[in-house]
Image 1 (tube, rainbow, N blue to C red):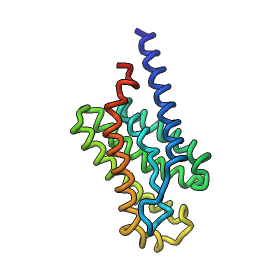
Image 2: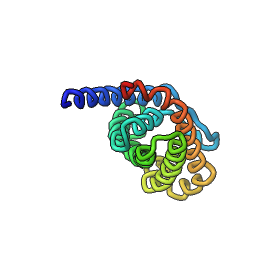
Image 3: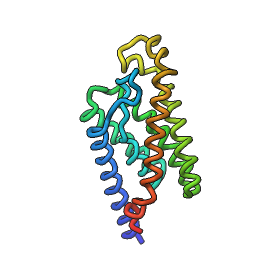
Image 4: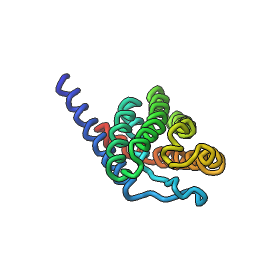
Length: 183
């Protein structure tokens, strides 16, 4: 029995490492503005592997992967965002992953997955709004400038980004979940 648990843990660890690597490659290769008026807000699909991890292994595994990936990204492919960007990313993606993973863990159906991803996207958007403490420092702009961008750019961007990542996660997860679980 102990050997079986160790094998499962090894599979999970390797799967999480692969998902983390995919996340980092995705943010390095795919990033583009969604809203022309705020070109500094770039879409990237890096949260998709993290959401897949939360679906497969639960919210805490998803949060752990979030923290690891955010630090690696923050010191490599997204180094220009610095420690403030790392903290903002951990907070927003971490909130999303905890909500999404917790809801899906209780009832693993397609309907629950949709609900979990929608609520996760809304929570992630709210977390980015709460990141208002750091946003002026991150942007190097006064609070008034950031507030002026909130409704026309920041909120729509975060809803779009989280929504796109949620839709892609929904369509990918079931087709690859058996590989991660060994079924």
